[in-house]
Amino acid sequence: MNGRVLHFYLAGINNQNFLMRDKETGTWWQQITGKAISGPLRGASLELVLSDELTFGEWKSEVSDAPVVAEVLKEVPKYAKEYDSNWEPGVSKLPVVISFPGTPLKSRDVVVGLEMDGPGRAYPWDTLVKESPVVERVQGTPLLIAVGPDGKSFRVFVSRIDGKDAEFFLKGEPGGASEVKSESSVKSEGDPKSQPNPAPPPPATPAAAPAATASATPSATAQPAVASPATPAAPKPWLMLDATTASEWNFQGCAVSGPSQGKCLDRVPALKDYWFDWRNYHPDTTIYKH
Amino acid sequence: MGKSFHCPGSLLRKPGHFICAFSTIKAAPGTFAAGAYGEFKMLQDSDRRGSYGYWWLVLCASAVICIAWFFVPAFIIQPFRHQTPAALAWAMALRQRAPWVTLATACVCLLFIVAVWGGISIWKKIVLVLVMVPVAFSAAMARINYFEWMFHPVDSAQFESASASKLDHGEMILAVRFGAEARAYPIREMAYHHVLNDVVGGVPIAATY
Image (tube, rainbow over all chains, first blue to last red; front, side):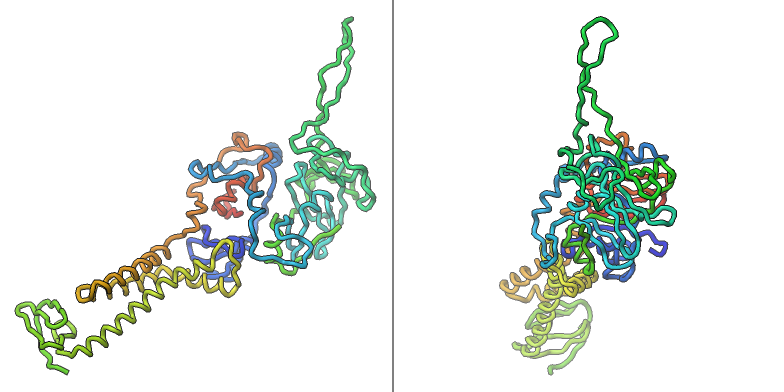
């Protein structure tokens, strides 16, 4: 802040969103907004940095090909017993102290929230999973909201290529490790978003192996033909196509083939939050509906 | 009022008489000596009761202020309690000043107790001890961040390479990237610690969840 490095610690809670203080000035900061709400720096705002909330597998696959030093926070041994990979189901059952009846979402519904120089915009997670990728204009800016191949990761981009608005679709039939939705409305290549979707594929989990296909391989000798062991089909990479240049784009928002190859879409900061918390700090927020 | 006199040396004062360094002077029944070191006046019992009453009032006020200064913000800032903006503002303002306010009022209470201890009944001593317990508790707790009893901070974050990490591929993480450095913070750890100060690619950040 103003060139001074601040170090933060947990200091309290405000309607179930935590408060933190900095050691240098004792100022109180609200976690979700990054704003100083009391103390010597009251009124100041921390700069929100671009971050991702995604699976370790997805992140690792991205950084392994990138020229970066990629590190993971190690668990602190003395607190390891307190960590809980399944904490969210427990938290989702806790009571809320603030609610907004009359809104179409329940308090603990998960949304992806973002701000674009105006009131916030909330995308219900369940809707996003079903309809990804979602392209719409928010405050005049075309946005692309995509749920990743694992069905848990998400990213938001400015949906423009060379300054022109672009429409995006998920490429090809879903299958194998790319298919994670139980009810999919994945659009096949070239289908406009507004057309009815093809029949949804069978459910699968992120860890599901691709469907095995049995094949009989003729032997080069006179021995009787024996069906070879089922060879799993290679999982199809998760890719999007844009309707403008027909280039293929990966989950990082970069074109990997086609006329736009090498270009990347601008990222937009967004976060996953419970509806009641997002709504509490974004009272004028709107909600995405198909 | 009674006559004044000078008393050189140290003084031990009890109701009814006082002692100078070199002699003992008995006050007449129903009177006592009061005053600053060296100069004393003989006063009546009624004057003593008025003076004591004032100091008991100061004790009570100091104790109430000390206890309230800790407990009011602690009551307001609770995990499953709704906070209004006004109540939260009060709580933060009190908590900001709590360390020195509680210390000052606790010291006032302690000084009073030391001053009157020798001349009061056993029942009053018990009352004073009972008052001093929450006062001392409040003064101590005003300096302690008890939220970190529940969610310990990471004192010194340690990292390992992505290739060496044994995290499950489906485990959710928060990830940032600055320049040639990428960092991942497992959400199951961040959900416990809540905040982690780090420097990534030369940029100081606070990862929060």
